Length: 225
Ligand code: DX5
Ligand code: ZN
View: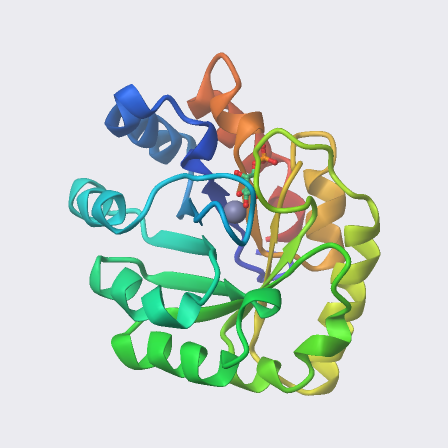
């Protein structure tokens, strides 16, 4: 151990083959995945529909990888606690979607999961200044939410660096997650900037061998752990 950082690789099942989801999950686990990222979309907060509570419930029974639920839905406060009850160990909500963020984050923690705050690419880190005290992690979007396979927005690197400084200045234990367009090319820069929970969808499940893809991404982060 050189730096003592824990890097989590969180494959996003959005890009998996849903007809063989169990096998896909087993493969990424063998490759070294430490979390499972589940993208919940409501066709309202983002222009896409995906999966919800019943799938999280089934996944929680089928795998021992902790489920990281990313809620891209309007009124996340109505559902956040239900995702914990369905088995998610981490639940994150967008600042852009929630007028009662403190209440929602508290409900996630009370239900027994880690509470995360998500910010879109054009949302400044300054909007987090109060919420940081009530969150366990911040998810910085490096694409606009809604779809897998989009191009990484490079300004996210500097944004993560500034957020990391903000957290350090406040002496908080908040971790940084990053999501969107992460691949073998940019994962090293992303981790160097301060992100510790790395989400990747198409770079893993779009690869011929998802197990090897996770292994490759993990190896690319070794110098920081
Ligand atoms: C986008 C989702 C992401 C998505 C990432 O709205 O939040 O988790 O699955 O996919 P890639 O890694 O392909 O950008
Ligand atoms: Zn996501």
